[in-house]
Length: 69
Image (cartoon, rainbow, N blue to C red; front, top):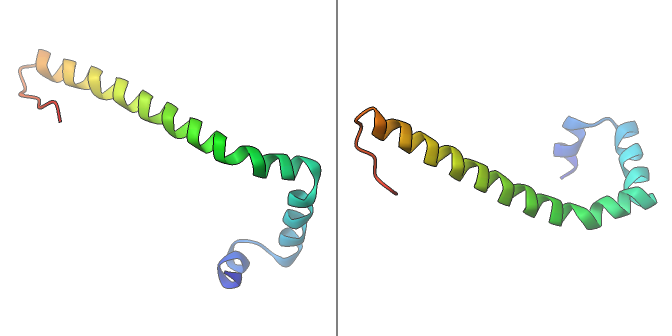
């Protein structure tokens, strides 16, 4: 993992990240992030479903054959 992180961050930046994740807000973020990601994914799926529904309606209005799948 070291080569991957070292390409993205300097040693000083990594030290700052460690400080952040050891801080109270960093620990809170670590605890909250799984729920935030889960809710974000669900919201994105709902949004995409609504967009797809509108797209299918518009395509049907223009005479295209649209499958439900």
